[in-house]
Length: 173
Image (cartoon, rainbow, N blue to C red; front, top):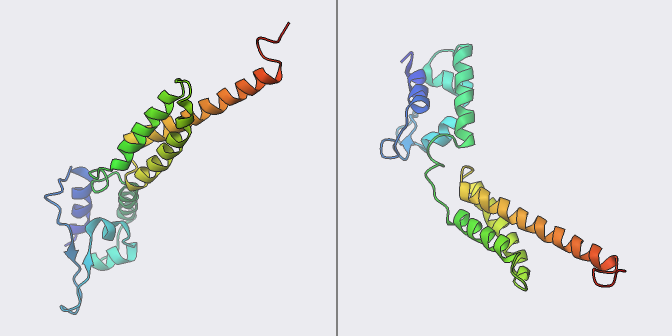
């Protein structure tokens, strides 16, 4: 029981664990067998206080063990470990497609009007998908393409206004 907690942390941090190996939920041991809480392991471990860990182990944790627990919890909350990485979001894919359409339609006359709503939707869907899975590359690319198309559109409007304010190309002398 002495190194059980360290073994648990070692198993989670050093090995690549498939979803089939990890149980989806487990019951916490309580004094009353009737009252058992259903707890998801990642959520339970990421919110575990040092005092609770010491109570589970039945001894005080050393400084090195406390630091390891906090580092492990930080990695869990950032989504480095499995759980969030396996989730696929169609919003990320939609964001990427809308971003490509927004950038592509900027260079087609009269279709550049469609770039504005596509870019805004790409940014919205991309940010929603990044909330679900922070490591979603398609969502990040969609957000970047959305902002690039909005930036290019603003640059084009500024350029047109500057040309028209100076008298235009064809009126100069």
